[in-house]
Image (cartoon, rainbow, N blue to C red; front, side):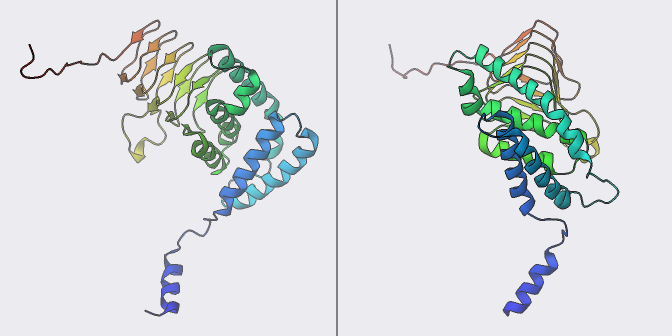
Length: 264
């Protein structure tokens, strides 16, 4: 087969006219600049807001290809939300430093804790998700996912003072609801019981009430599953039904000690 025929076949199968991968890189650049603008003391806020607006316009051009869903005016509203987002993120950082005995300073949390970074990018993406801004919120949280191992869908609803410790392997689904002062450890999954396209507009992921602690590798599934306030979910627990307030749920391993056949 000659080169011309091969090129023609490749072009024939490139079926997505709006699939421009440079959008990913532009989202990552926008996300980094936004993070630094909010947190880095040496990054000028006033100057960067103008730069961020220009970069946001580029995202609009690349992501908003459906003409019946205009998103040009989203920036002004989003910019107005940033002080409130920053206030929530500062509470998240304070929750981490007050709960984790390994944290030596609040600055360490902002710069070195992958859980905090994942929460920060989620909160920044969530406001765009609420406005119906296409694709960009998911690209933002996937950027954080790639860097931290934490997969938070931008559609999840997360309250104040959220703490993810160690972070790696945490998965939080699109319709999960997490209320205030919740602590989550590595490997926790807040997922769906079933995966089917016709469930797209239904609540598929659990609700976690105030002051709940979920230890490593616990799995909580289902849109009707509610973990009552002040409860503790132990490591490796598998939960698919609601748990009343002030409960402790734990997994009990079966331990068998292997002995030598002729041991006395």
